[in-house]
Length: 250
Image 1 (cartoon, rainbow, N blue to C red):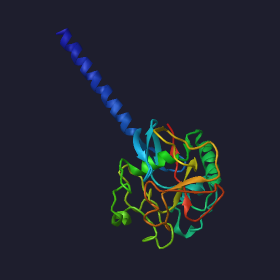
Image 2: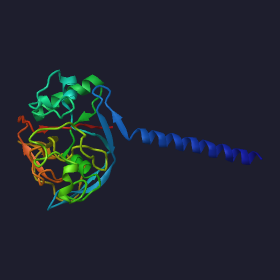
Image 3: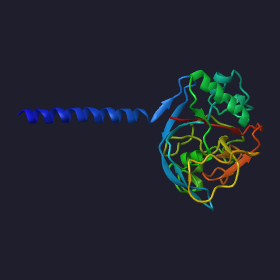
């Protein structure tokens, strides 16, 4: 009798522990910034083939949170007190643009200070492509059919030569919006040739002249908004088709 009671107690305790772990894991699948109310999606660790014609294996060992949308004009204004965008008439829900890589670093520093953390940053180029692909090895996160692109992206065929409010198109399988088109997104890395062989959590070269841009924009062709397409520019450049999204480290 005592043994049966003991086993019953153990089973109950294990059930409670399992429910607690599952609940904590489910809660960790999303994060919302308390200051700018930006929603972040948990991107789990994994391995993928990076690049297009010449690919190399990349291991993402550390999970991270990626902002579900591009940083908006309203979010920028809340932190910086201004709006540098050239498409101001688009509204607070549209992506901020006309920001340099250096401007973005200033935004990130201030956001970290406001929230008392050091966790916000730009994604590495590898993190960006891994998150964009969301498990796909095709040209786009949703497959190879270019005709489906209008459902996922604002690009030269449907943008009317301007930005649009974020999250109006379909997200990829990991819940990220506008990874194709709307505005090109700054990454943390300096631009350089890819490494050869398998790379683990690559961060790009220590120095360089150009910063990496990913995703293409409202003025890009279908080939430029593909998951693997790389572009670059000087980190001081400001343009009405360049913005960014944030990553938050654990």
